[in-house]
Length: 252
Image (cartoon, rainbow, N blue to C red; front, top):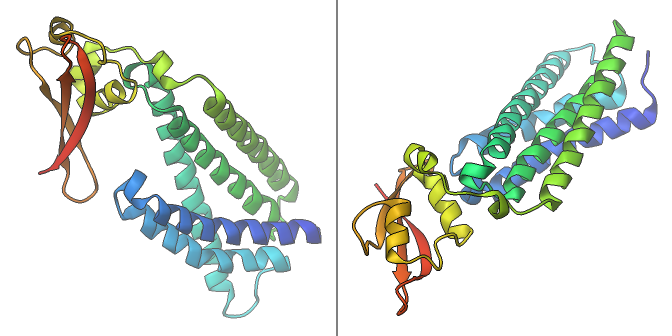
């Protein structure tokens, strides 16, 4: 059954725009979020394949000549990439949301992973709804509708998390989390200003070490190139209490 013109045009615009938008987003956040070239390369492949995948969606049929091979290949590759993005983003969102108490994961970071999951699911729904395939047409519409509802629910969840309470309100220092993975805990301690106002003895009980210590090893971070060692340091005021805290990274 031929899809309505509005659906075909919308699907073509969504798939093409999402591919180009993914490349722009990966480039813009390369050195602020990913710190690895893998997402940029995946986004480049997606941006290149998207126009080929969108063409049969817009025309409502597959090419009957030599172009059918790149069209089917591009469509399958595009669908697989979005499925992979949805799965990875969903796992990151789940991890971020379930560790907010221990690591103080920022609400915007949690919301961003949820939004990325929702966006990928909605594009998948668009691909499924507009694919020119007559067999099992009713089943495809049901699957597309279910994916659309799931994507919209994910987008709503992202908005709710972003507009909800700050992660710092939920963050509570846990010594077990500090021993397991110091990097995110140290980031939360600095970002949430948890250490400000503590005296030397309270700092000793919290992070360990000798009385009056001002520096602690704060784990390692993978920047996608060389890796870096982090150091948590504090400055005491004249009253003997922490005036400021900072986190520094040193390449290995």
